[in-house]
Length: 377
Image (cartoon, rainbow, N blue to C red; front, top):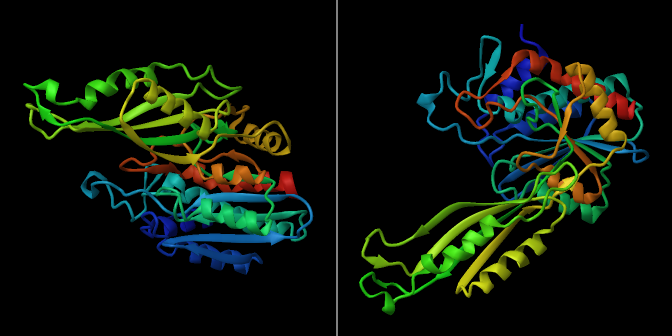
C-alpha cells in the first residue's frame, strides 16, 4: 500500500494543472486541512486560484509554508517514457510533471502540517499554508496579488519557507537564503527602412544599437553583495529585418534581462540602462517588467533552525546560497518576512521525465515537521 505522502503526491500529479489552471489540487488540499482544524480561505483573482489555510492564534510568530500547484507544460508527450500526468515509479524514482516542482513539496507540507497540529494543537503563534496556481506563469494574480491583499488587511508574516526544489544532488544539501531581483526589458530601436544599396537614404537600427548593446553587456555592474553573485545583464533575443537580404530594417527589437543583487533597485537599473541608450543617441522606446526585487534573510531564528534541521537530515551543514532564478518568496519578503527555500533535488525540473527520488519524497514531511517543531512547538 502506498504511503500517505506517495499517494497524495500521485493524486496531485494526476491533476494536469497547467498554469494557471489549478485543476482541483487546492480543493483536495483544503478539504484535508479543514478536517485537521485549519481555517480555509480561497482567494481567486482572475483565472488564478490561491489558497490560504491557517491554524493558531494571533499571538506569537507567524510561519508560512509557501508553494504552488501549477506546473509547466510537459512538452512532447511522445518524448516521455510514461504519461506525464499518470505518475509512475521506476527504479526508485517517481515520474510525472510536477513531481519535483513542486507537488512533492506541497504534499509534504500538507502532511507535515496535519502531523504538527495533531501533536501540538496549542502550538505557539500561527502556522499557515499559502498556495497559488500562478507561479509558473505570469505571476500577476497569484502570490503577488495575495501579498497586496495581506498588506491592506495587516496580515503579518514573520517566517516563510518555500518548498521550491533547491537541493543540488542530495536532499538538504543547499539552503537558499535569498534571491536576486529580476528585471526584463523589451527595447525597440527605431530606424528608417531602405535599400541596402542606398544606405544614405536609410538609417540602420542594428548598426546604431550595436555599440550601446556592447556597452550594456560588457559593463561590470558590481562585484557581488555578501553571498550574492555579481549583477548580470543577458540579451535573450534580437530581431530585425524583413527576411530579405537587400532591405535595411526599419526597427530592431531586443529582449534582455538583469539578475541583480541588493546593490541595486529596479528603478536605479532602469535609469542606468537608459542613460547608456541616450548616450549613444538612439531613437528608442523601452518597456520594463519588474519581476521582483532581491531579498536576503540574515542570520536569525529561521535561518539557524533550518540549518540545524538540514544538517541532521543531510549529515552535514548545507551550502547557503542566493543563486538560481526567482520564486514567489520575492512577494512575501517585502511584507517584512524572513524567507528561506528548501526542497528536493532540482536536476529534472521542467524537463521531460521529471522525477523525484521516492526516498527523498518519504523524507520530506519529516523534514518540514522538524522545522515546524523547532520554531513553533
